[in-house]
Length: 551
Image (cartoon, rainbow, N blue to C red; front, top):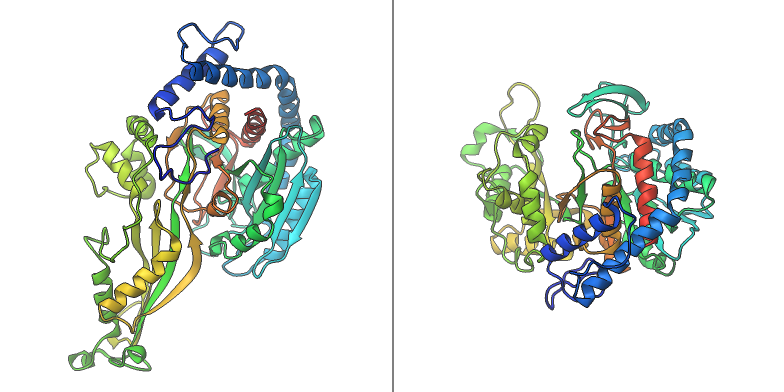
């Protein structure tokens, strides 16, 4: 079984053990098999067609179609019962979702964290978990749950119950009242809940718990055994999650794969599946006259003194100038790129397919950006730039006079925040030492470096993993043809499950939400012909669990 780590000794093997099948051939073959198994008007058969002469292809056909038959013949009635339960109880599911959303849980401010952990534990019990624990850490609690299923497969659900603060200006509706409003999306009119955490990611957490309850109250058990892990420090860098996973490794290692539920449709109804995540490191740099021994030492002074007194602000600007060039796009830190590995072989076909559908205008419009760094006519190059570029980003810089009007001052100190996005096989443990070494080598030992959070390593799963194939089949079952991205630009702490427990993982679903970390964050609860509502999103999760049980 692939673990999502890179195959350093050669090309990756497929997850079924047939040896290496080129990704383009594999994708085409499995698509053709699925068309024969589920896309024919005739009754499906597990007998391979005559032209499937190669033994491994005949075996692949038989196994995939057999799994399809198990789902369609044995699971069809079962799924219908669960779906009916979701439809019947959807008002209660919306109420549970709003209940979770309205509980504050801002980890940046330490607001409502303990109360939210206790609420998540109550919801675990409410939906039918067999075992629930609130586990103390050196920081915020982790909420563990276990729910027995009807198969020998076990899925580990990872969630975050903490959110970003919600006190920024720009909200059209109260940020913590979970109001249901009408919205007009490119796909049409919908009803949505507006609240902090609706998108990132208490909304998907509630949806998954709703799907568990629907299984328990209709057919008795979910299709798979479930281990649930909800942390309250994701927005702080998941500081205590690695230690928890190591300490609870015996129980968590019973899982066969990890799943992170979220709503994977865009506002126009297009769906997305991400096979991996980038890593992230976050730190501050501070230049002060006191530490430097030059410039103002205790407070800012009149700017006329710049004629004969040095500036700590320019000191930091000069230091930053040694770290990168070309608007930050060319990173000059020695060793920064040394461990970067080439893309996986299977990525070639995925990127070609992405390029056929990629609409740069939609991305620019959503971000309010006028142009990208690269010409937009070469879509493959643009996508590769996003997927495989490590970055050194200046998040903010402040010092001296920042208010309206003018005040002529020579500041005594200045601070900036920087994040690094990691790509395979960069490791977070290497990055801060590399930055420190670079500053020292250029004579900037006085620049103070403070690691803000512990960060994440990047990780990746193969498109051939059974858990990934299961979610792709669920997309197809709900008439979705997802864009399959080798990586997400964002960071999620999957590495603790992927590297410590050797678990493959997947993340996505149908349904739509947006504006994470921004005012008016929302999730759709009543969709339209293109975007799924909450009920359909929950049914997707049930179908995915059922499919993984048969994989």
